[in-house]
Image: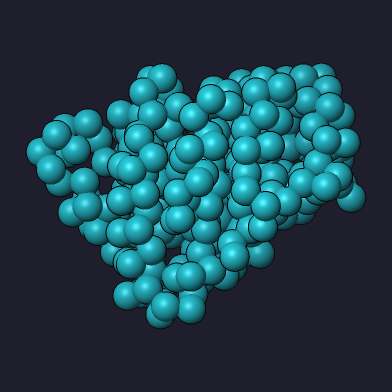
Length: 248
Ligand code: PGA
């Protein structure tokens, strides 16, 4: 069985004292936790997060990285800069990056490949817009977005199905809608890497996950965890979501 993976995406929130307090509260709660937990914070908070989380069950993640090791890329951060800090995960291809910063399937895949080569594990996000869902094109869009994944290593990869219409809106996908998309994505993984690798890849759901809806979503056969935005900022809410993870 796949070990559940619960990832917090703080987006552009927080400060040093807050992340320290948050991890000091969260870490002791994870002693007998069946799930793997990753906390993805803004770049500037990574050193303190990595320091506090050292030797604990919490892994620290970034929210983006560049595809080159170094170079003239003002404002960018390379995967090696992240690993040097003790960061082990990175989110790539989030819909906010795609929508607001012109990220494409191609650039997301380049970032993810570079991250993996540097030793990072990647949470690779994909998902349809409301218009695409209403036009009945959800699976077609997921098929297109996932076409680039054959260039990645399935071993250090989790997919995050995040319907754009569910992110930060308070309107989550139903467990059935999530399961349909996840099963489709697992089928794509099987086509790209074979049944064995597809059975091992964790596919997270993201989009307005709360302590109230997490259990039903995580109970679906192909939903292996969650990428949690807004609710992850509150350590009590994120802890409650972690507790809904089925035992591995
Ligand atoms: P949300 O964000 O939980 O606030 O909807 C999820 C995400 O963007 O990863």
